Length: 222
Image 1 (cartoon, rainbow, N blue to C red):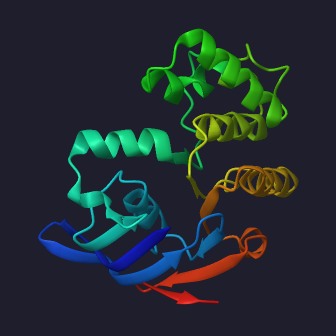
Image 2: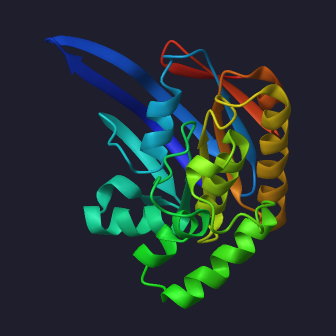
């Protein structure tokens, strides 16, 4: 489903070249749960952002179902991000002035789905993640674990082919983190979504079907 060929990413800072990704090759199967394990600062977030078409590689190719996403124009990539990719971030990225339901349905509204239909879909996915009684609560009225579940509901509302999760348990206590991990895995299995998680947490990585290690800009199978 996903093929990465000789992917590199270099940043220029104060006239210095910082090589973050150095010729990565990887294949990810449909429905697979993959952990990208590595210490902070090793490029895990950069790799996820490229896979989700939020950033461009310096060189190399990323193929989704044999199509190179970086040969598309930006409107097509934006449509790809909205319909095919669900993002879960460590810091949730919820809009504080909107309710859990309103945050959840944002991707559906952007996709042109009528608000009534989007709300019905949002209620279903929030119920699936255990927040059916929190629809009208704003982020400030929710715990960290509940906010992360809203973020997961937002990520899955469009039934994406791929969920990209960047340190999804990083801001949570151990017990809540285990619940979020279980929720992501259960949802991935239920809808056969490919789950790719960037983490430095070995326990989280051990729950995935496969783990690769990102070190010194390259990946190694574990």
